[in-house]
Image (cartoon, rainbow, N blue to C red; front, side):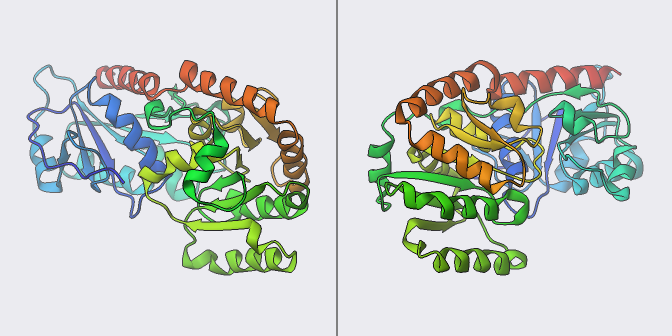
Length: 359
């Protein structure tokens, strides 16, 4: 986890980034990685949970009210960029109840029809950003900007010797295939488990690793999967790491020989980018966002959603040809460097803020 920022004084921020999630999540990660670059391009503050790094101004609500009371000297409005429903709601409260001169922006990543409540909030935003054309297709009106996420590439260094990195972790076996994210049906963890039950006996050098928190709601789901693994006699071939610290993720991604990102529904997850940056080929489901990142049979393999047999087939094909994995690892890293850096995302976001502030 990043070291919390101190409450640094900011006289006139142009951008307000709320972070009101109850826990560290994928949304938090996208904010955290982008803000490290945005802070060098535009004066900003983060309001809410202190997951941000050192040097990023963090404000409390009274400070936020004070900072936004008056318009900026140049007459432009400050931009308030929400990524969650609760953040949109508080933006409306600040603008319409406290009469703060703000422009409200929301990033929509969901690939499903929004709830009535979310649509109500979105309709009151001044501008909408989406991360992919497919996610944008679920909006009632076209998004104003399409800005895919990026990652902080230096956080996920390219690891070529996977077996050495694996040994350093002290995990069983010689190689790993991992799935990262909350343990729940949406993330396709059950599909991953069943594919591994089918294929691990053919590849004794591999261990399957499941990284992510299991909330109380999905504890039964996780237990049922563990029972399936036990019934198959493969309990010693699976590792359940649970939730890990943010700073531990790069070494885990780097040590995997393959990463599976097989969600049934995903807006624009960072898993593929983080794995590819670390030099790890991916098996990715065709959720819309992942196809923007992963080139089939170049950086990994694309499979249909909700298809454990396709995951098993992709794993088998990749695992039986280590030289092809090496080629995919190099092309994936180059892909991230060229198109999906946080520098690119931060610049496009700041360009969008400038246009919104003038509108």
